[in-house]
Length: 184
Image 1 (cartoon, rainbow, N blue to C red):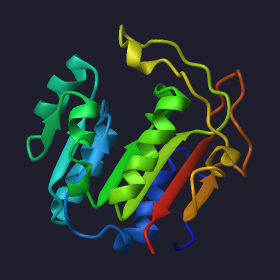
Image 2: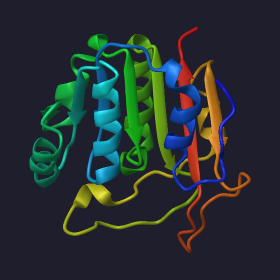
Image 3: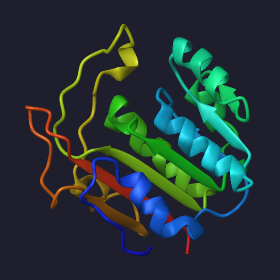
């Protein structure tokens, strides 16, 4: 993994700019979508030749995703997309891991590792409290992630945190963690 700027709110864009060659062609899974940021990400991957599949658990966001991502297959629940994990070489999950309880998400990530060549996860670093947003119960943060949480996730993880490694606190300061795993 090449060095990239970590003094930024969203680490993925900085990582991608420095490591674009790590994203090989082939099917790509994006877990969760709600903003124009993911539209930019999915279009970038489509332009590079990826078949993009988006897994989104909240029904209103599914409809939004279908409108904003006409080039992508949109799947209405994560379990449906992850049932066919063997077909994805790359899995990108930006700002969503924190919406799933740790005992559920860690086995899911390990399952990703069985099949993918590259996994990129971006999440708040540390305790970052957030409740449901706009009626979306899936927006509540039910897990909190620190660098140490990847110590039991196997070898091959590269971890970076934004803003000099400080973590979020209850005041909701913006600090992020980027976890990248690649098959060697």
